[in-house]
Structure formats: C-alpha cells, structure tokens
Image (cartoon, rainbow, N blue to C red; front, side, top):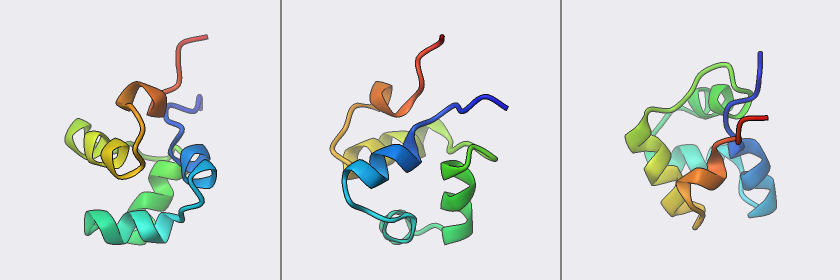
Length: 66
C-alpha cells in the first residue's frame, strides 16, 4: 500500500509523539498509530486540526503524487 500521509515523519521532525497528538485531538492512541502507519486515514477536518497542531500546511501532510 502506498503511503498517503506524512504524519509520522512530521511528528518526528517536530519532536512530538503519537501519544501527544492523540491527547491533543482527544483520540485513542491506537487510532493515531493507524494514521501514522497508513493503515487508516484521518478525515479532512481532523487533518486540518493535525496540521494546525504541528504548525504545518495541510498540503505538507499529504504525499505528492509520484
């Protein structure tokens, strides 16, 4: 499966953890783990919240087509 988002990479770049993101969003850490491993994807509204929390543009969270 092709990686769709870069959440895991950006979390590392920002020195944040999936647990921190889950707490900020009020989500289960296992849900965030699924997003980070590209097993599941957050909805658009959640993606916007993630981008705001990580101080990054939404486009920067989504892999560009190769």
